[in-house]
Length: 111
Image 1 (cartoon, rainbow, N blue to C red):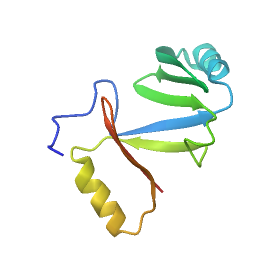
Image 2 (image 1 turned 90 degrees about the vertical axis):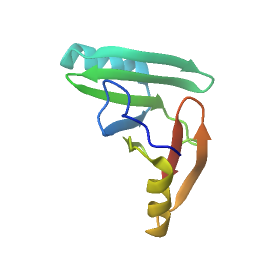
Image 3 (image 1 turned 30 degrees about the horizontal axis):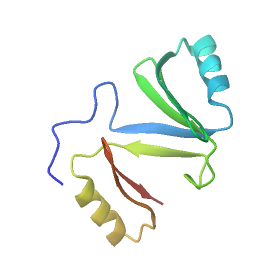
Image 4 (image 1 turned 120 degrees about the vertical axis):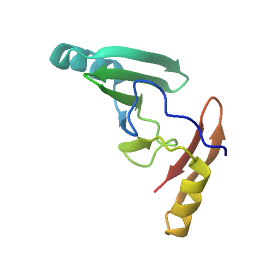
């Protein structure tokens, strides 16, 4: 993959990705307590995906999809060359959880 210029505006190199039971409840809580701003909300077949911004930090979340994630949270890491990082991770004995996914982004899942 060719190197990109940067990760998306408003995100950091490392971002928290939560898998929670009730996305709407968390959005309401974070808005009430932390004055969070709803950035994105997508109704999906098996629940919901959303992003809120608290200060300068984006928190990504989805409702509990047992097939999609083995853990309740993960780190979403933006890198300039996902293929090179992925290859290094595999050489370091990281386990592959999900194949490369291409839509608007390339995503790799590692454990």
